[in-house]
Image (cartoon, rainbow, N blue to C red):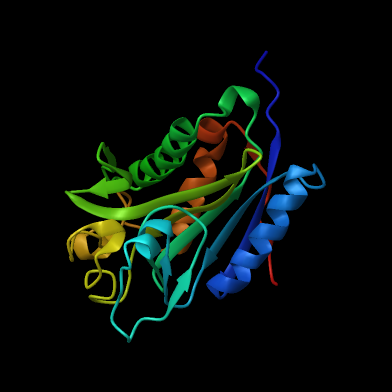
Length: 225
């Protein structure tokens, strides 16, 4: 008999401004801390914005004026968000046996690696930096913030982003061009010939949540704010 696995609610939004979702995440995090809600995963896409983490602010990193920016309370440097990117935010209360930040981040990375594997893509970790890589290029950023062991922020998986918008940035302190998206590497279709779009990636990601995060995903609900 397998151990009981808690349910996790899936909220799917279309396109929402980063600031709006960030504010909602803070509310949801407090509610989860107080056990007013169960664990939640938000699936969303943002209009273009470059978020500035603690390291970017501390190091006084700047970007070109044609990028809108926003400060966020996660660690790390700058992260691009925009069209052609699946953003996943886990509002999860991690159990005592799970309370290891490196291991939690490892699970988030593993979720992406298995998602890519379902599409016939070999994703892997880089020991020097959080995230997921394909062919020596970074295609997924991971950044979390915790309060009472409830996580906020999450991952950003690039599949078909506008030409040169990510590549022109020093994302996470990397050289320009290192961070890119799957289509720029030629990965436009999965191993069955289906297009790799947001829907395909969401399907693969949801199918791996139980195995990797040890929680049972519920049927996705449309979410508006």
